[in-house]
Length: 406
Image (cartoon, rainbow, N blue to C red):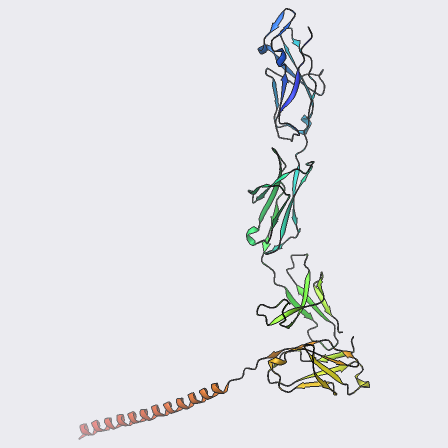
């Protein structure tokens, strides 16, 4: 009679194994549990199972009395081919070796959390995207878990990205992620610290502080020095215009400068066509003052009496043969952008700021005058009463003295 053949299989788990997991093998001889060899008859309880690794004619790695062989906390080095056979009796009669079964053990995939954008500092109301990349995980059929400060807050996410928009200070914390595939888990990623700060206040400075017509002017915008990646948007204020960004009180609108967006924190204002300049007050003027605007030219000596047209907010307001325009009594309505044109060219626009004069109204003056007069009259009456009382007091003392003396 031919010897029985054992067969080996992996009971659990099926597929790829990671270090630290447990695998169970089973040696199957179910067709030969009551087996007769020659004049020997063996019962199923008399079987022993011999387990081999790498090659079947080697020394068994272990012998078990049951069908199963469990490898706990496997390492990569435990991978390879395994055989089994069964034997019973004394002397031992063995089954044939099983066909081999392959155990594949690979390093557990590693989750890597990437913060996008990868800035060292995030400010409130920005947008942050966290991406969980599974490295060494083979295909991309993973689900994802997200943790904040070691607490699971997103247990099932089919996408590798988690977006927070907008972020607030409450979103600050330590974030990690891991991949999930069936009953398989990747390693948890290293923690990434998200720190959300209040919005920074930019500081605008100008150089040089004292400027002459035709000078180059540099604007510098300084933001939080500990953060990077800023782009800078440059504007000038203009009278309120619908459709433009405006200040909160809509007193002025913000008009983008040419080349409005820069990656540098400085912006240089270059004088325009360069031959015509409008000289105007640098500092605010007060209502009621006299203001003179002068249109000057590079070659003024060859044209001592230049003719010039003066414009306010793009509208022609005056023609002058002397190159000067005077506003005898300036008012708030005169505030705006001024420029001049001549045969030599056109000047850049200059902004004239007008402050309201703190004038006391006539009604207020009259009230003050009436108050002063009334105060003086009351003071005079009180003085007269005081003198009368004093005179009567003196007379009463003299009368009493005369009676006692006589």
